[in-house]
Image 1 (cartoon, one colour):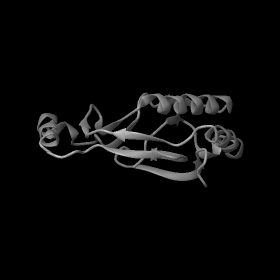
Image 2 (cartoon, one colour):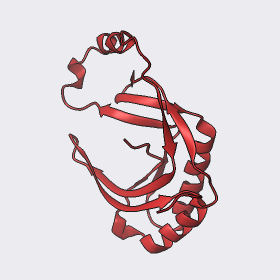
Image 3 (tube, one colour):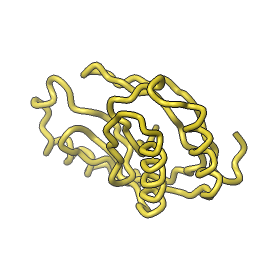
Image 4 (spheres, helix red, strand yellow):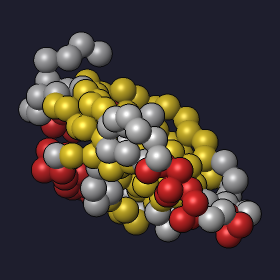
Length: 151
């Protein structure tokens, strides 16, 4: 599972000084204690199936800080910050137009047990991500622990 904070669209791992970036993100991460996001039932959206989380405030603060750090690098990219905590479970692709969203939503609603759960946010991951229209792939670059968490 992952909860995307920021897409630096058009930027590869070689397009930025990774060591300087990690130093700045690491310094920031040490100022923020781990916290818990609670994720809700899956929901069928316009481009996939996702679960949304709360509370949004600590998530948004991290997104805003990381966006500022990335912009300060001077690298050429388009910042696409996440607007709310969510995890994507499935994305729409070829054939998605054949899926009956109402039937899928009814099936999710028929599950008569809790589907929400907490996730401890105790580290940030920097990854290089790309997709081919059918699959999303990523290359891990670094794991940055939060305050009070060992690497």
